[in-house]
Length: 391
Ligand SMILES: *Cc1c(COP(=O)(O)O)cnc(C)c1O
Image 1 (tube, rainbow, N blue to C red):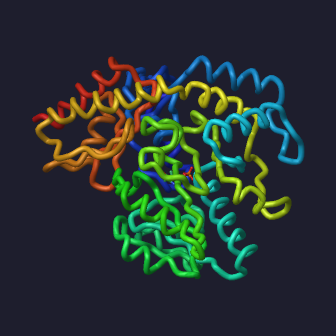
Image 2 (tube, rainbow, N blue to C red):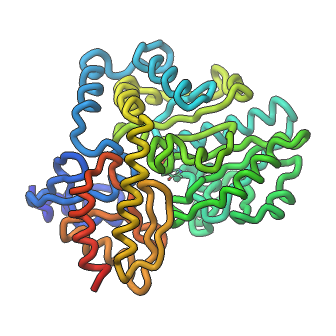
Image 3 (cartoon, protein in one colour):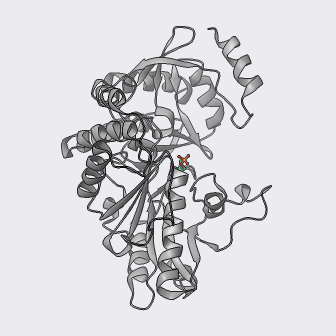
């Protein structure tokens, strides 16, 4: 079907919640896909950091289809060996005690918020405030847009959920002041993705961790790894770069290579807070998604994580040669590109019409390529990008 026809069908029937790029992705391999017009396009976005293993990954497809032929859904009222094996593998590999499996980043964060509220309800009876950072992003549900520390999300949908306070990233004095006995948790991103690929200072993360763990304070440290997790930054989770040990970690995006999947992991101290009847999900922990996620997790070896770091450095080096590039932020294969004079949105649109998909975040270009992207695909994409960043 031609792009014009696809556009017409979609634009007349989908709610207009997205400003689509003029591209229709129809089939693919690795970091390259074929669009509706038969053109090959390089993908530096991987569906917003989701398709970690790219398109058409053999190992993942085998894992998913094998499970599909056995059973597609069980509900969480019954056991399933694939789900059980994945949960064991994920907790073992990450060092967490328990996991709640769900379908998205927002749902993983909802779980973390409910866990934090009930943890403090059980223990103290009243504490309910949650500190998040200015410029953060935590999702699109009512609670997670409230948790999101950006004013423009806090419009239209009043009243918002109570009990969120916004701290300035890096300002430890302010955090100390805010961290009173009304606070049950803090939610942080190691690199603010939607906020513009803005890294959170590691010393700040360490200082926050220290305050949270102080006797009599007992604030749960929740790290939102929805965008940064599952190898994206060259570590399994980005908080490892900062050397901290969170109580709760949320994951989604790259966890399932495109099948809806999210996870909320917690340490032993929080293992028995969300009990039968207090939380749930119909689709969460789907065996087909788990079979694929299990395969992905098995590929995230130290060797592959090192390759991700190397590819990130390779891209940075190339970018540093483009005259239009002001600075590059981020970790591993999560990169933000600040431009000197040009508009990132316009460049992303031009690229999309000329064989390359690249994302934006605030005023920056943003790259979240598949973790399996090859040097050849990087070179091809950078060649296209250079047309706009070198002139
Ligand atoms: C994308 C994102 C979310 C929301 O995930 P959804 O799967 O869209 O609900 C939450 N937190 C962060 C850091 C994200 O990048």
